[in-house]
Image 1 (cartoon, rainbow, N blue to C red):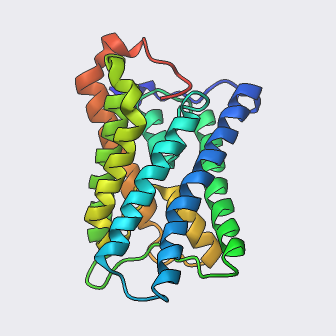
Image 2: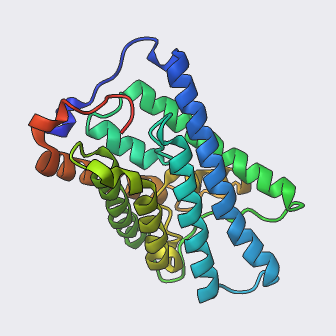
Length: 252
């Protein structure tokens, strides 16, 4: 079982130069992703003079997040594995593809990258409001958790299939595109209901800068459950014990 492969890591691992470079790569990739994704929403608000949500706004958010994530994963892939998401890092941890100590280092870098992006956006836009993730009218927290579980399951399952599986072959070259596309598609599904985060760091930055924490736990619990389920299912059924030894322990 994947859970038996969870490793804490060696003492001092988190302070090694290679690990610190990987964390910096995660910070920069997250900054790129959140600046473009959150910024696209702010640009749409400015163009529409803070008008109500429209289908065009949802589509623009989907495209901005998809394109930015393709780039963010690509530029970090050879350094940190291009996780750009605490839930993806958690999925890699559950499958035994990253140690807990390195995972914590990644989580810190990812969260700081998101906060930095939101602070830069607030300054660059002259103090425009940074909107935190929230639930739409008629959507309960349990509804939102299910959305986040299913959407993040799809995301992390895609990560495993295109970037983790040792049998992926040339499919690995399109991993960033596939990952970006599934996030964009899921935003079209869940964006109108609860924001479609799939990424605790993406929700954390706006929450910190706007200091809005209502239902924030939804955007941690759902993605972590979805990521763990995807990791356990894919690693157990499709990778298996025989192939697992071929995998690195530092990236995906």
